[in-house]
Image 1: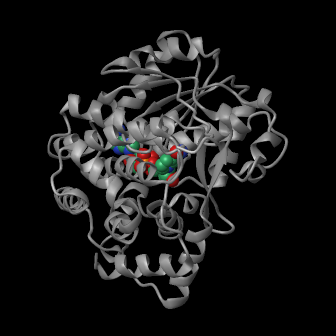
Image 2: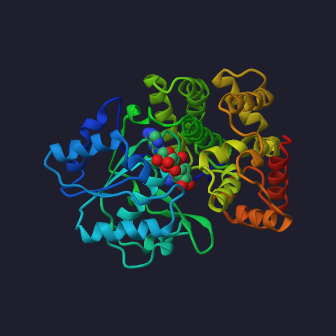
Length: 391
Ligand code: NAD
């Protein structure tokens, strides 16, 4: 190691992990300083018993939570501003973020924006733009994930789509990290199989890309490699039997581990998946799952040795080739579409659109973490491979 090696490591927050712990929601919110929280979720979850139960935990404790559920999958800026209005009108003193990555991200950004005077896009994750924010204007957040994939509950950012440019952008501030996370695997039992598979593959993509990203971060590497093992062992179990609480718990851990590890960097899976998600409204994790083998094949020269080491740890024989086979087997088991046309309804993409997506991919904030430089030519090559289904 060079004497000059320097790095910055950040670790997550208090996580109350375990089945049934959503019963601690009121106490968690109170210990984060909330009396009148705004409960933020999405419209699907708003109708589900797990949400009614979580709200009851709050009201039984004498709290009077507000409710905002106008958050769409791959949330957009108008969702954030609508929530902000409800937050300010109701004079809420904190945010309970309840849901998958979409609701969590929107909720976190609403809490962040509570006391800011500048527009949201001024806080995009570019250089030190986060220092423009007034940290005193950020409300406390308690995060309760109901999917096991994004790990947004332990992250310091929210992914929001800019409607004017159809671009997914990252809003970042260190204080956007939830004060307390309640990671209760029972909440994930009702996920439909497609969402179980897609979110689980998102956790794998986070661990995999973080592990392959260049940079000195042995702690992230350690977390990523164990996160991958948990996914390979438990994702098929929860896909086959959604009520397997132990395996659901391991997936919830893997999701938080992926998001902890990806402070080291992500890569081309995400750089390609972000424009596809923003334009075609595909599920984020499922889109990552489609791109995974094409990106792995492209990055092979840079990651072959590292991934052989990971494979040996996970218990996969055959080095890089064995790892690739395990990814292909897992995708098949989870019914992940092999190529993009299987993911996007009435698929059509002309040369101009491909060029546009490649242009978006190479400027995506995740592009810099790819172990092989992500040029436009490279992005087009992987996009074509993922359309034709040729690994
Ligand atoms: P999601 O939040 O979009 O939810 C997908 C669907 O699943 C929704 O219809 C929701 O109602 C439903 N759902 C959620 N929990 C459920 C449950 N327990 N039972 C039944 N249905 C349930 O999906 P996601 O994959 O969790 O999040 C994707 C979003 O997260 C994308 O916008 C992506 O960009 C973002 N993301 C953020 C980060 C981060 O670090 N902040 C990381 C990765 C992805």
